Image (cartoon, rainbow, N blue to C red):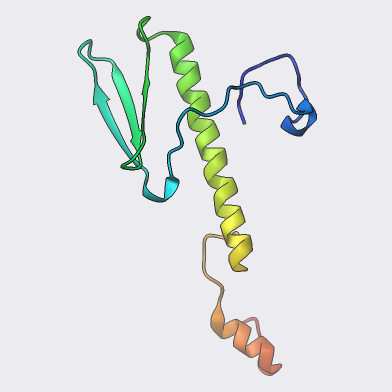
Length: 121
């Protein structure tokens, strides 16, 4: 998921126990996570993520806004979108639901179970 480029193009499972990142210093529970967009004294954007117990601040750093910050923010956004898609798929699979956006047509399913009528109605 858009991690640090350590020269290893293989999937994460190929790292054989090595990780390209340190152990997490804080864990934010998604169940109660809230986000806040604020600006600092230099009018630079800061993203605050909190679950009421732990808080993380994502900021531009001492160098301020730069192309690298824009790229990193986009990479983070893409990783979060990928993560949300994975969580949704896992939840729907666990619940036995389809991945489509619309609910199943219950009337059609009833007709098909009964074996009568035209299911193309």
